[in-house]
Length: 484
Image (cartoon, rainbow, N blue to C red):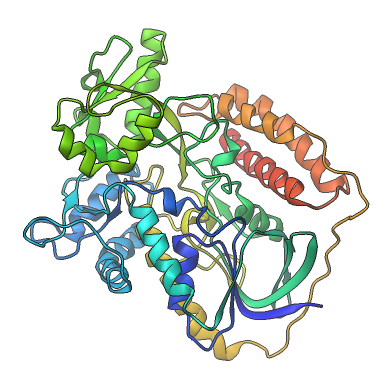
């Protein structure tokens, strides 16, 4: 039996939760959470949220210029203006919802500096801002009587219908179809398409894949950001991020000889935008024939560092490094996606009443490289736009719901092992920091063959199948773009 909702939101990070909070209370809303509620990329955001809010020495033009410069002027200028000019209202709103940002002794908000920013404009909660924001948003959403949250639920398929959309969901061993008039995809990034990433385990590009399969426009998926300072422990796929705010507080980048080198690549030194720093590290790596690089802030007061970066300090201690006493090994790692499901100013995709927010969307605000701490801001501003657009159309939707048909192929074989691992190796070789077109062309043929097999093999539709198909499809789109 099908279940009917006015709005289905796929994803419970900052974008999905904030969309729910901004929807009218008379709409029946379902939020689908792939794993447990705490697992999302938003909660991993350390640095903070950028915005001009009660800032006497800063203005939105400065913020806009910094965003455009970092993005290589490939940004959508109109979207950037929306982002920076509406930052204040959403920062103020989440403060009212209970988000606590660090303050100075005089009671004013402390704002930090990160790479690419000309002014101190990053609001933060120590070095765990994302967790503070998502936890607070979730607490507020859970109070809403019109919102239902389904945890540990895999979206196995989505189809457009004459009345909206049908989602094929699997919770435990049970499959069910859930219909809606409006759908919001807030499924996060694509980190698990790479061997090493700062992203959580859920970042497999599911929303992008479903949108692509329905014919929605995908744009600039090859615009992948590699964070320059991931902790260099290649024993695990998930790399612990050392926030850009550490460099904002004065940390130095060192090569294998423990020498600073950024002066050879950019006049902004350690505070150059992320893509510039990652590029410099890879070039220096080739020059020195070594992947040993370090981040050093040990010359700063140890008590200040422990208070300013408690999570980073403790996580590094667990790995055997004391941030206050020694350089810490780092190397670039997949971090963020600037491209995604192409949307307009209302966060609506090329398909009617299908919206995309957060990292899975392409608003155009980031250009070819995201400015630090603009991601949480984008998630808030544009998910609010999506909610407002839905609210303006709620009276125009039909009363009934069409239900699409899905087949889980319950008696079919499971997918062959190894396609996710092989895809990650291909992506790491062909599209990491400095893309290799020759490797991309070779890898594309293999990825295309794997994707065709998954689409046409009639395999059992379970979590393994969904995640593998998403990872392979995202790689397929990226490599196809790279070769054009």
